[in-house]
Image (cartoon, rainbow, N blue to C red; front, top):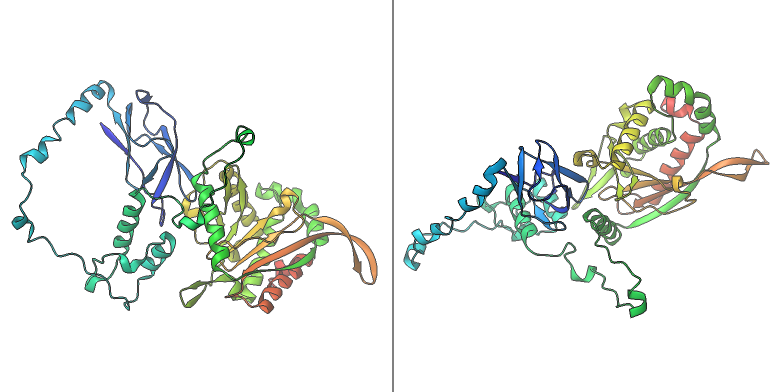
Length: 418
């Protein structure tokens, strides 16, 4: 008999929800055949069969929340399945063989772990886990030197909390309970449980609004030159690089140049510190059937437009197929979202925490503008920069957006790194 357990889901991901089982108890399974779909806070993954045989008892049913390492089910080796269950019968004999310890015997129990002093600084990994899980590190017994809380202590506390029957949204006040509908309306309503990803999106976006001092500044960009450049070279570009020349490569490079000039837009808050990041990992928001995901194109300052376009195309394809890895959506320093592909003319994007800035692209629309004292029809796009005012001042935010505008209206600046 082989156990099927929840695999390691990536750093900071400690639990998942059973999406659906692809097999029923008694079905034959092959090695590495997908058995069950798990929904995590970030992605949906499939758990393959660790061995061949017959799927035995399914322990975790659809919709249940399970922690990393939890038992999902069992695979019986052929006909051995029938003998597998009786083998578990002698288990109750174990407690009977050993009488319960007397109070006297229980006295020399090992000392309880020390609690870390309140004024002791926490390790960065502990701070991060505490912030992401909502568990106060000061309440966790520490096993380190002088009672310090270690990363292992936090992970164990998170796993204990995950196994407890608590709702996904911890604060009761954050759960909205609607008034019951009239009977006629209720009969025509459909109630569907939110997926774990959708619940996480809702929680994270609301947390950003409650935490960050979010503000949005706008500008508009004349896309004439970028569109002319794209039209002139798109066939040669696709022939050489095997990927279409879109607008995202230009916008990503323009943002990187602006981030270099305005480092606050590439920073984040950590307690009372500001972390300025001297690397440029740009998240590209991708809409899927299951919700919004943000894969990260790393080191965009060292990549060409062709390399960026290839990365975005690959991420977009795999995001829609549900094949992104968790680590591919972590570590971003700035985000770009394009509502224009859906026809949005203007919007105020919400920050992708803990980042301090997000650029919103929109629909390109021909509008009359004044150029050199004359009215001309130009393809214009509104740009929106939402930023955390705790980190970025208004002057910096406006300057950032102006630099992006200048780069896009004169694409030679991107080539010459101006």
